[in-house]
Amino acid sequence: MTSIEPPTPPPTPSGPDPVALAAELVRIPSLTGDEEAICDHVARRLRAMGWTVRRQPVRHDAEAVGRTNLLATRADPVVVFSTHLDTVAPLLPVTEEGEWLEGRGTADAKGIAAVQIAAAEQLAAEGEARVGLLFVVGEEGPSDGSRAAATLEPKGRYLVNGEPTGNCLATGSKGSMRLVLEAEGRAAHSAYPEEGDSAIVRMLDALERLRRLDLAADPVLGETTMNIGTIEGGTAPNIIPDRCRARLMFRTVQEGNGLLEAVRSAVGPGIDLTVTLALPPVHLSTREGFETTAVKYTTDLPFLEPWGERFLLGPGSILVAHTDHERVAKAELHEGVELYVRLARTLLREHDEPA
Image (cartoon, rainbow, N blue to C red; front, side):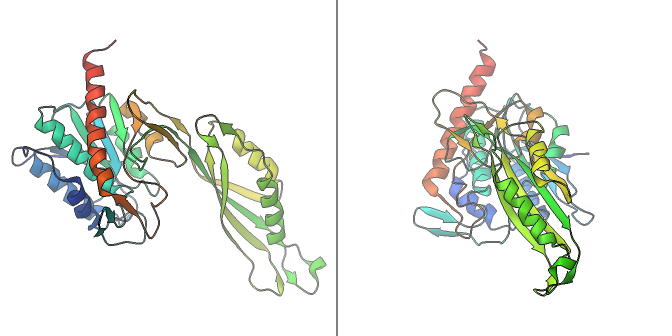
């Protein structure tokens, strides 16, 4: 169920400064699952600019009341700019040092949200009302916002999603598969290892077999990669461990179950395998006149397919996202506004004058 909140004053004659707006958004905490404050703020901001705002509740857990996706329109959209409003922990305050804007979310992805708002406002000031804004929650977690957004209306023909791509159009993004491996052994006194069965040794052997796998590659997206994120097991150095758990993440470049089948075979018997997340890789649209790149991370785009032809574009570098020195160049934010405006005009012309 969605609620529709009409605009208040008429739209402003020109768009906001993307740097100032990005700093404004970064000051509002919005960790995944706790996005109510940023949703309220952005909804008020957009209504004040003249947008009609639809709010779609998204429940993360029993206590996460107030989290909403936001769909802002002036007319039925043809092009929709989209990104997420949540961030990872820990919170980092916004600071400005010369050419840089620093703080949590400056690159991923509140700076991008500010750029999209500024670009949409510039187009509106020129009389173009067919550009919408979709802001979702939960991207840094279970992508519950983008999953829910499939039912929002009205949708457009083109969706331009925002993630840090260095202001290049992405040709594709990798998928992901998260796994939990659990080994069970038999505890014993470490002086008599033959009386026990080490779950940690079992796990290490399985992980070594996984490290030797010949993983798939793609000419656009590159190689499939594996990260052993955590290993937990044992209770003391003088006890043969009877439990071990490992969490893994694959960045995938091919669809289908081939990778999972290869992993199951390599792990072998005696270890339980659970898939906790599986998102496919996505090959994306581009247009002439824009620099392109391929990105190795996963986005909300697998869940946004109902929104039409998909693009990925945004200022900033993924290499500083999620770090304690997240930042974005102010000039890159301004350039991002120009690129979003130019891409929207390109797509709107294409819509109006089909080949």
